[in-house]
Image (tube, rainbow, N blue to C red; front, side, top):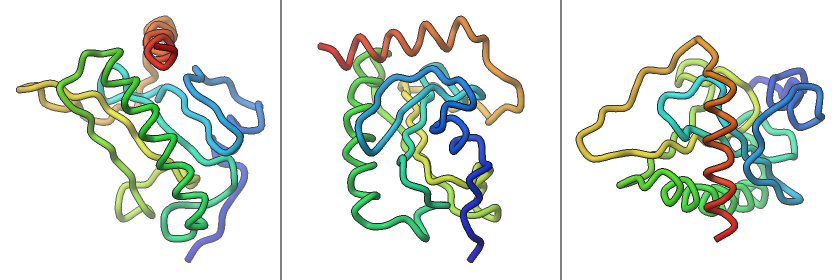
Length: 141
């Protein structure tokens, strides 16, 4: 198994070296908007402790991360008035993992609306900020 490389983009975000549209944070996790979203409201939850993916994360850190995923997904569902939520998680390149820091994707879903393809283009920063504010407001109610 490959080792963790702390130069990954999520490690840089956690250290404050790169900006993000933060929507939730606690002692162990951080949630923020995906800058290349598959749909409006697409966000990510990452553990603060280093791990490459589910193959090497400490089970306690995984449990803590999943508790944060549940908090954030409830807020995303409420903020976007979604019919459901898709959670995605990838392990290693063959499975589609592109950033090698454990993370969960949270995507609001709507009846009869197909999920968009993952893009290689950055989303509009103002739209991301708006979506982050919507989710934060849903967390506070």
